Length: 88
Image 1 (cartoon, rainbow, N blue to C red):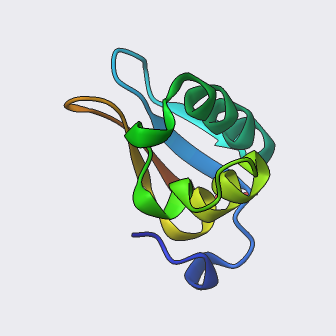
Image 2 (cartoon, rainbow, N blue to C red; image 1 turned 180 degrees about the horizontal axis):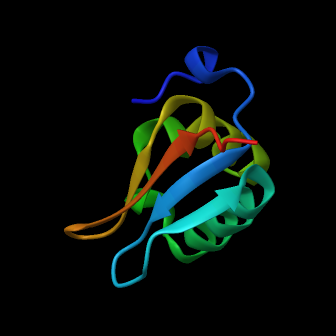
């Protein structure tokens, strides 16, 4: 699991989705993508820690970004995201 404290100022993520090319996203874009993915999943398909936050999608997304780096979106299919720093 990614440790948000380790990165501190995460602004960009490499996002890997099944059947899609690798993408670099800003945190707002990642939040939107996770929102769309979570909207398609039934409550019983979510990890237990997200089920506890039922009804608070923003809190679910915050928890995913802060404590995880992947989410099972279908049996055998995972979406993954990793914080990256872009050189200026």
